[in-house]
Length: 132
Image (cartoon, rainbow, N blue to C red; front, side):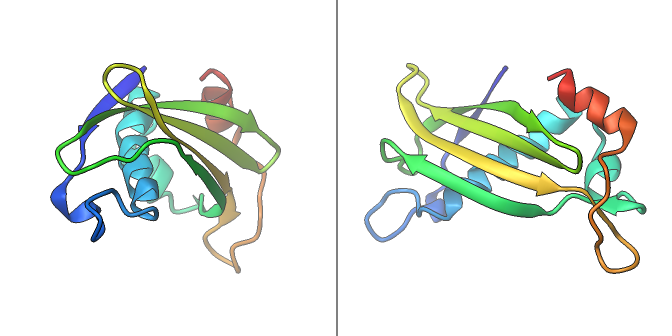
């Protein structure tokens, strides 16, 4: 499933193209829209009292520039589900399908109390991640 967005003016740098770090903002914006479509609530993922899911690794390949006003699509894939971590891939494309960027984020499940210790992905969440 693809989600469509438009680049905002303030996401560009002095050259008029999306600043490299803002690609992760674009990806996260898509992730926030994608989660409920996969059965996750905001409270369950971002405000869970028992665990957090912080980023531990990100990477990207920039293929073509994005500029303010450009429409772009984001397709998110759950690429790998481990014991305590999950890896998501983000393919950003122009509406005509031209590849623009590929990003990857790796998140780890940790306790909220007691020093953010790594924990196994809760069974119900892991099942939904594996389904996508």
